[in-house]
Image (cartoon, rainbow, N blue to C red):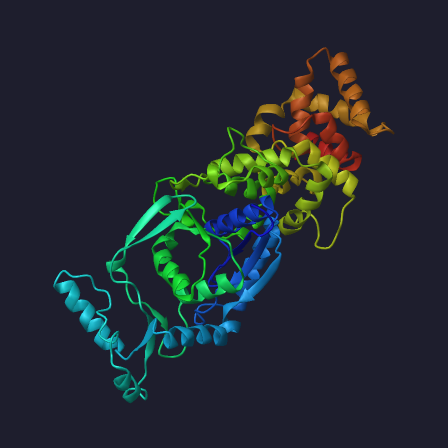
Length: 473
């Protein structure tokens, strides 16, 4: 393949960009980038009652956050209604479509009758062969336009993922391509759009498989070469039911708000159905290099939130402390640890982040874990206080406080020497001082290296917290 590859992501703007849609967009983007092709965004907004500009912007924002840059678009179907109607007129003129004067009430009545008789409830075709003069006489009546489907034989789809699929043409409906209100229907407009936009490969969810034979016949009616199709298996929850919000299937931007890195989510999404050997973690350059539909599975993928959290933690560990410091800033503001619009010393913040990044799974966790670095005071855990703030520990803390107050170089190296001198003089182990000191400064019993913590918290705060702890606070 070469740069003639053209693919599109075509969401309906009736909601935010969710996990399933994001994976579809990602697979299209990777396929285009792998082949040096073109990635297009098309907004399928013909359902005007549910489509909103807000959702369009949310979809674009989600794609931008994931790094899925566009080559063309966004295009909106509602701006193309005149084009669709001109194509409908062509089919009518060629006798490949016809006017249908059946009312919705009549159609529903016949549908119920067919079901009661155990028959296929598809349209019975009674307007299919109306004489032209009768059609002319009925021209004042409201009508829809139906596409004339073949009534026998089979339609074959050679799917890039699912392989060969056959459809019985006798089961296909003469589908409506233009409603009586003049609006075109989904299965028709996507074909016109894909032809106009010279789409070479249609990559979408497998809930569209049953639409494909209908669309193939529209291509053939116009004498167009259909694109290649690849239908991605659906994503299931851990209980093997269709993915929903209870499984964690929230919008892509909700994952941003929960403190996930976009690179981690991209890595996770691509592994929902695609593999490259046993490799788990990929750079975006590797994904573009290796991506192929030869390695996309044909069975449903299972969404595993724990795996996503683990993957995000790996990305955080491998992200520079300087970049993480920038990324965590909005979360620190949201938590109230720093005032909105107040930018701390970023060099200092990077040092603080560096000590904590291996302990946090998300940016939200990272921000929360920085409380004892940024807050004016800390609350000491009662159990930790009871266990470590005993008279012998408090005496060591008092000695430590006095020694630290004399330090002009409040560095981890000098702090460590001070700790060593005090426990050496007392003839005790380092832990006898380190744990009470950790509780006094952080409020708990777990933290990064205590000497680095002291340096980052800073001399003034350290002395105030030690005073409070020694005084029984």
